[in-house]
Image 1 (cartoon, one colour):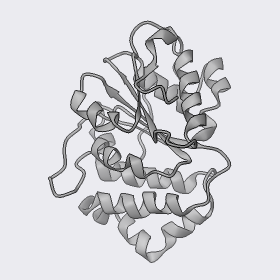
Image 2 (cartoon, one colour):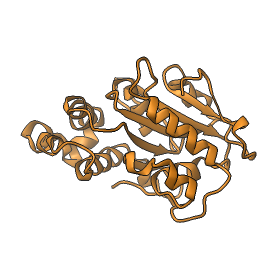
Image 3 (tube, helix red, strand yellow):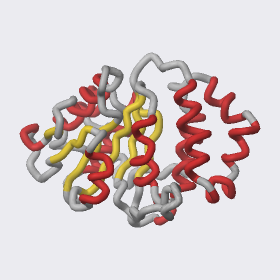
Image 4 (cartoon, helix red, strand yellow):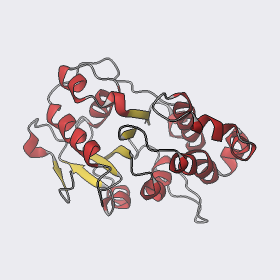
Length: 234
């Protein structure tokens, strides 16, 4: 159920400095008081999806040299052309399947998923009914219980602002963006969350700005002078 990028396989250029910046953020993640993620912001057509695609499936020399793909635990690309890619329960189940299949995680993760208490919440109807509970029991709690991997890993989620909407006011998330905004501070210290959003969506950016390092300036220019962090954490 994971959604892949429509830009996969296309040439990547003029954003090599952004890859270096993400590499530094990844390397710094496990340090004390480091933010749990990176928010890539920019206007429409600024290159956010292209950057996320290059992180997951590199085609350029710079992308291959950055070595980010080998640290990518899972990815998801929300698409305006495919409404299914923005459905919360589909995102969660797709994420779980990627984690289950990844050789980067301890085999203990599969064992946790096979336990009756967790396998029950992975039923599609159960996940639709309470996606927050499924995310908690099948993603958050198992990852926190696992021994740290040999290297810091990342999860990439592109275009959070697509079909963004609030929950029902009863503690339930109504979108992928809201789910991640409510839980990114609970991720293990060995995991970096990399997300992208249009900078015009100030309400959504604000949900991440107080905790996540905010990467801005994804404009038409290609130099590192246009890539900054709000607090200089990475």
